[in-house]
Image (cartoon, rainbow, N blue to C red; front, side, top):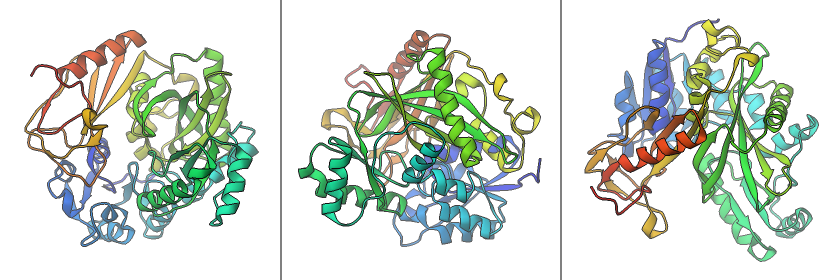
Amino acid sequence: MGKKFKKILVANRGEIAIRVLRAANELGIRTVAIYAEEDKLALHRFKADESYRIGKGLGPVKAYLSVDDILRVARSAGVDAIHPGYGFLSENPEFADACLEAGITFIGPPPDVMRKLGNKVAAREAAVAAGVPVMPATGPLPEDMDEITRLAAEVGHPVMLKASWGGGGRGMRVIESEAALETEVAAGRSEAEAAFRNGEVYLEKLVTKARQVEVQLLGDTHGTVVHLWERDCSVQRRNQKVVERAPAPYLSDDERRGLCESALKLARAAGYVNAGTAEFLMDADTGAFYFIEVNPRIQVEHTVTEEVTGIDLVKAQIRIAQGARIGAVEESGVPVQDEIGLRGNALQCRVTTEDPEQNFIPDYGRITAYRGATGFGIRLDGGTAYSGAVITRFYDSLLEKVTAWGSTPEEAIARMDRALREFRIRGVATNLVWGCPS
């Protein structure tokens, strides 16, 4: 293994920042947090050994997209590496380039791999070259509306508009007919630009009865890539995942192996390094799988994979960035492929500050009372879930992730049901069951 990091900066906020800070702390690595003015009371800044304000005058979101400011802090604090988390700059190859040029390790895929697979259009081309089946789609959309109309007709309505860079549902739009094209394309471009600093979008054929399944990947710098099996992410609202499960209970052993091998084939062809996820749509009518994209970063739902494999993905990311080898468990914490098994079943639910009685509109304010769930098989990952926390309108509405483990799918579901009913949160609306007694 190469040189051990002495200090890591986390270029993110909230739950994922705390998750990375904890992993680094357990590895004996000092940590640096960054925060926007609107996050000056956020918990993640107090979990780190050092914290610094960034983005003065830029606003709450653009502050976390300020490459120059983040690198200024990184140099001043003397960090060895930067972990981008998910969202913000996590899939931005220019940010990864800038880190490397500054002599700072980027904990994620190399910029060239990110360009191959982080861009969804390029990833589709790589999948086709690797012999992995893909969904019919366009290339990046031009500015000319007549040409966009022609391309949409070629794919066939209904279509899904997607951002070429980034995930999390940003920039996604279902377009049922030609009449809605111009408005939805403009709105999707604007949202993608705001979220990822890149407004490039494309159209993909929409499968109306589909399951979304993703395969967790890990690659080291020595040419080894493994999968950590799959997750089902079919339960979504407004293109945002709400419930994730591992393993997908409807897959046969043969389907599971075939899906994971397709993901490995693509990852090996691209020379994949660090953590990533290959996403597929399964046509519920035919059972056919189609590759849709690669997320070259850690995912929100990585906890369910950790629970069924026993592998700490964030620690593995850090160790791999230090040069650790997959298969050398004492280095990376990741065994060879044949030794990565599945133990039980896990599912994750996202508790959000959204009001179900108001069409799930985000709610804001101060949490006046908080009681979380505990007990055997329950894991909580949060960033603002505590009494006195102030929920602002500036960021994602995720409050806390609840992950339940059980020996069977039924046990995991029953455990999750019990845990969600134990929560008591007052002061802001949440997507938990409402109307239950205090």
